[in-house]
Image 1: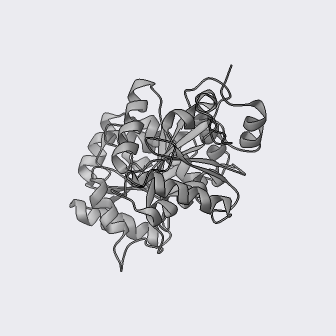
Image 2 (image 1 turned 135 degrees about the horizontal axis):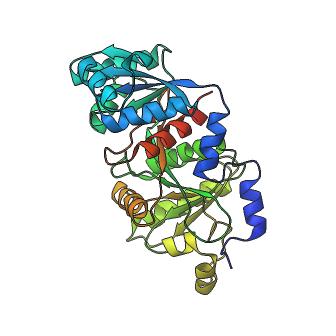
Length: 316
């Protein structure tokens, strides 16, 4: 029997996207937008661009070394003339041009090609020519929950941007994650603020932060949602584990968002799940003027297309 009650599932899934396949399907039903790929001379990024166009998710603008881009496309049996290519030889110039195109409204999403995440985000955060909004940038990693029971999406944050978040940074990371889940149709997202234990211990600061975030959640400072913490991972994933430990929480065994205490914990968990389960995730950086997609260079074209679909749902 599933740890997720049918009533809880109905509350969560009413009108919401409940799988990566459903996410892509919903994005496909919307008008296509433009994804700008920075330093696009990367085969997997180009495969993702071609798939996204074939599936009606987005048209692509490929910014980078034209000769290398065209050579890769021909090697994929793709006609370079079918793509808009902006020739920029140097990586920094390609990144700056890509950000400018999005900033000026010629693109709606920004994706990393053959460039480091740091190199892309430095330009995104540039004070004068970037995509800053005054909000914190954070990454939300989405995947099909492998636990038994109702098909549902689960999110991990933040495994890509913020190194050692303090309390206020965690509050902003939580706000960003809620924005993503609300864009997916979740009316009352459930957030588990994780630590190693479920009791507040002053010697373990993540438990103190988690309790404070839960208090703010109860006071409505994050809008309509359930925030519980501190929760150990077993309680976030299993209502039965919570019962055995005598913990009562509507989030136990029903978490939509797993908010981790550090980038290491979130990143390691996300990658371990991705390769051990396995699944094709999708993730997006929010907080900029447009969704920013920073899939790992090791991720498949399908995962990059999932990221485009997720980013598309964050547009408009």
